[in-house]
Figure 1 (cartoon, rainbow, N blue to C red):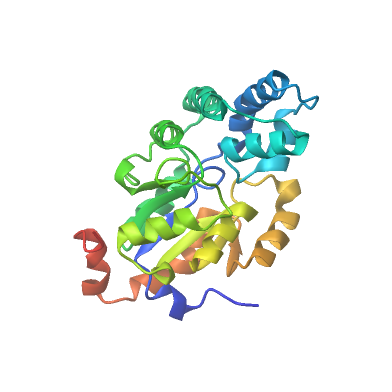
Figure 2: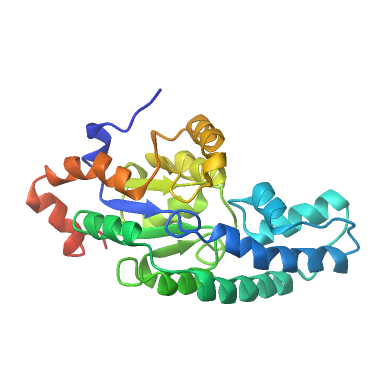
Length: 262
């Protein structure tokens, strides 16, 4: 089984963080709002299928609404000509709901602050940038991961896609000016882990916000997807990675602080 070794940690220049379910517990509340829009979409297209928020979460975690809606319509054999309109509706509903319910998490903030001294912090997500903006503001993470360092498979790429496609990780690494091996990806979902691994990024699975009843199965799935380690908290991740980063020469890690990646 591959491991996250010192030799893999030492060249790192960036921390590539999935956002939803990883930096903040946004997946469950997001699916409350998304399920309502998804069910209206299905009804409008004559599809006799409905989801609870939990059913939708379990079936589609890691996918964008665009991908989910297109797949549901294709499975039902119905054409969709107004997908962009539904994507906009879902984005508005979910963004507003997350902005109301999310709160700062002291452990996440502490971990990112510690990593910020050694690595460029980024968000690499399937979610839309407007949704990310609401989440980062609500959780107090705007200064640690500013808008310029957020990458969206929905908005940042020439053609919108969704994890497990590696495109958003490849784009983020190219924009940062690093090789994928220099970006440590942190993912909670299987599609996200597959996206990062396929891009060539060393990847850690994070169970911090995964429901305890689902953790054993998720860990097995993440390891099968190719992650090099699985942690149960952001504190555990800092304990795993920071000692190696702190041993690096100061001149090397200062590249991040002086904008050397851009």
